[in-house]
Length: 247
Image (cartoon, rainbow, N blue to C red; front, top):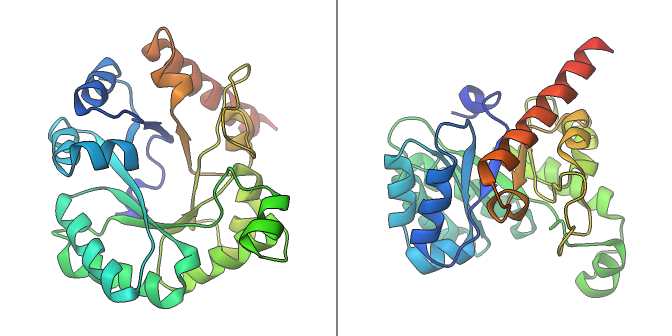
């Protein structure tokens, strides 16, 4: 599945809602526009696996963003359950280590009916800055160096890619290969509020780094006209791609 989906629609709409009715309504408003739906903790913990089943039944590609992080045996079981849901992508924390990431892939392989979901690892949250990394998390390295180290570990463990800021996407591709997938949150169209994100880019800037998927939530779902907002993002991406081809 990783190879089959790598070049599909790059926008992932984050359904950050507390109620399934709100999430399904938001997804319905975007019907017919090519994109993914991202189900995160807030929605999944409120609605459970049925929200994934409903989105899949409606024909959406689903990225389940739960960031598994536990001992290998526990995440193996979690990956089995997630694979049975039929999600197209899910993620784990690279900080859990190589054995944990290998266990995740093994669990998914044991349960997946058909193609394996894309499995990616979170390197550093896009809310993490240099000061936090050193003083609070206790990693005496730059954010970029930490992201690259975790990306290499994820690839060695058999994962398909990583979540990272677009600012590190080009370095990740250089270290792990062009086919190693990068999924980038912290995307804000020009003029949008940065919110709680520390390392952000516009859609056009992110595409120019070579990243594969862009996660965008509030600038689309909270816009006065979500369809128009999503279409503007897609147009910005297509324009950036055209300019890159013309260069």
